[in-house]
Length: 66
Image (cartoon, one colour):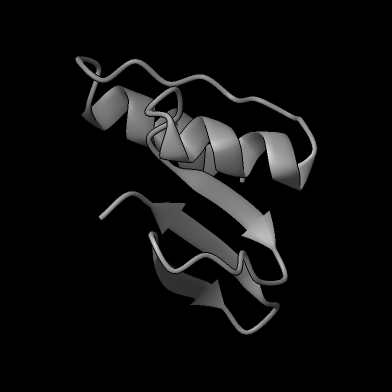
């Protein structure tokens, strides 16, 4: 994933990118409160107020506010 993030940063330098590691509960709350814009998590993030998109068959998902 590091190579992908470096490519992303080179292509879109105007976007600030930071990684955060916390419990799923804290990350979900930060997403709902607007502290985070995107979550990339393994498994599923059960939440009716977020959109989910599977990234690959390994059950890693990305979640963003509606």
